Length: 264
Image (tube, rainbow, N blue to C red; front, side, top):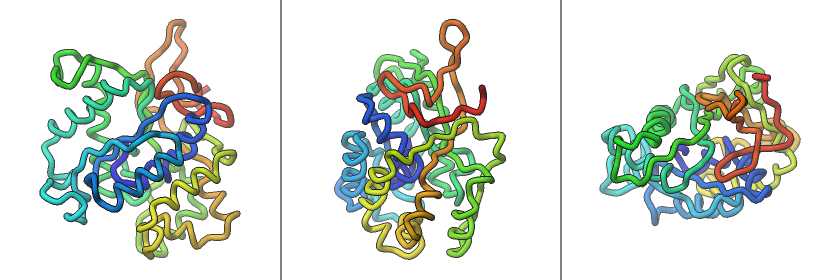
């Protein structure tokens, strides 16, 4: 569950591609941009490349782009209860084992739509399992884990100067807050193709897809070849084992081989 088209490819494209390749079902819910807009079409191309099926759009307006959803409020202005209800509906329909969203900073640049999506997804994650909340949104379903995509301090040596060069912030987290690092280099070509599917962003000067497209391939691979996550919530399986993003298998679980879990 991400804020904008391209967030899914940049932040979890490798995990989505890896998981889809293993035969598991994945899906992408995107909070902004309405069906029929050019970025919705690009998102559909990206999710097809990643094996995540057609995108599920909440259809709110991007924070700074009113025409992204004509006649709809900005995500940051929409009633929280309304957005949570929509997210709960998708969780109950998809019945995922694991949900992934933005971190509390709103990723490196602190975009307000990212922060809003993090907060509302966390609330929807809990509400989806409670039968007396949003009873019209489907049968209750409680995912086993919620993960936040993030960036540790140690992983922004290349990315930090790149963003600073276009006057964007770099809000990374202490390394100790990252408990899962997934090596997605075996699926890097697919992830990069999904990023390139967001053609309008690649064609601009300041968005991250555009910045990455101007880098030498080896530098780009260093930046996007590992995906980092923090476990916001993990239920314990029988016997006390924690549900992990890296466990693989089952509808909606993510990652697999090539990942390290720092929690032990």
